[in-house]
Length: 442
Image (cartoon, rainbow, N blue to C red; front, side, top):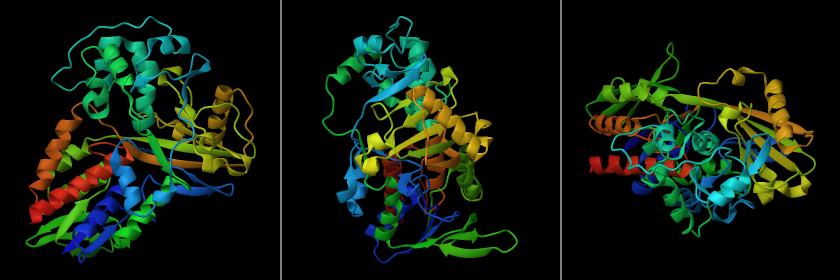
């Protein structure tokens, strides 16, 4: 059996590994348009130290990420944050993030003490609607707009870099929807029964090690700098067109898995699944950048980092003190801090030169931490069009995409554009796509 996987991010690599486990003798080719595998799992050497410049942790309470780490032989490197204490930078100070369920307060006394919300919190219990609505609409009707602006949106911004006024509550914050009708009472009940499992996990040496380990375990043919430009059906599978338009080459496969971002997937599926292509073209993306600063002294203060509400109009949207969060990064007494910049619809700031972007991040970090930061090394990693936006109606669009793809023959899709942007969710989506494809090939 010949399989073609288009996209060498963690979705495509997970799909490759699952195919290899199901069919040890299969011919599996991964086509990746860039010069490396891994997508947004990527690490660099900065100032003599390895650091993740994309995703640096996974949600450990979902099992898929940890299970994949163990399957590919990295269990001995699995680590959990040394501190989980976080803050919100608002009203001119770093304020402790109280216990919440995706931003819905679970401890009103802790919220009052934090000073994050200046206005009285309202509480209007309402049943959850049957139709999809935005996170902002759902939450503000029940507990007020200040909760949206200073708690919910900063948490969503850290994941999607999106706007609560557009993001679907059922696609991006189902935990909040499940608290209805009384969000505050529901959050308090949830907080009284916390899970004993760690919330987050990472890898000693960086999460960016995971793609190579998955690729090695999958033992597949990986083609870099190989852009697949077209997929056409054949009686016994598909024909792929690869490479530049003036000098294309072709390959054939019995089955194809498209693990590319929505924009590329839309183009590729136009000739085989036009309805899916149409819906994929409607999925928008946010761009962002990660600025990493390395210091030869520890970062002052405590906690793993902080989030920034968009209503405060700062340049950064979040910061992680990596050398406090991950013990392995603090070796030698160094300090490492990374700032995220960029929200959906705000790309102008990201057009700054690297030096200017570093300076903008450093100035915000200094103000928030109330100290002077003198980095010995710095880095800018730009992620253009990196984060898909799950707008209102996203679940319906994904259902239509998956239905059209399934009707197009031995074809499947997976990735961050569909059923979750976190690493475990993407792994689960890729695994499910392969299982569905294999069931149709039987």
